[in-house]
Image (cartoon, rainbow, N blue to C red):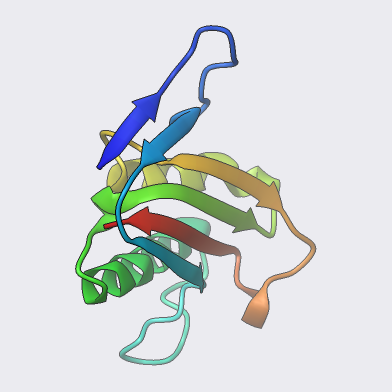
Length: 126
């Protein structure tokens, strides 16, 4: 079960996420997912939108294997190689999380495995 937390005494979210999420149930920690297509073993594109989409599809598949879905995610962390990609990543991310969005952090990093543009990890409660 997820309870979305919001207060006007803290800054509003600047994307599809909540300030905080309270949850109870089985915790599932999804390791960081880069945009590798599991069918081919190679990146599913060279642009941030395609790579974000594949990373989220990978998370979705792991959660389904655990008996859940993206709706169970309570916290996500997005690692970007270039913070200039934030808006494009956020657009794709928002298409996966439309309601009851998880809490989220997004940080720029110097490099990611296999020179990916994005890596996303998640914590879910099922």
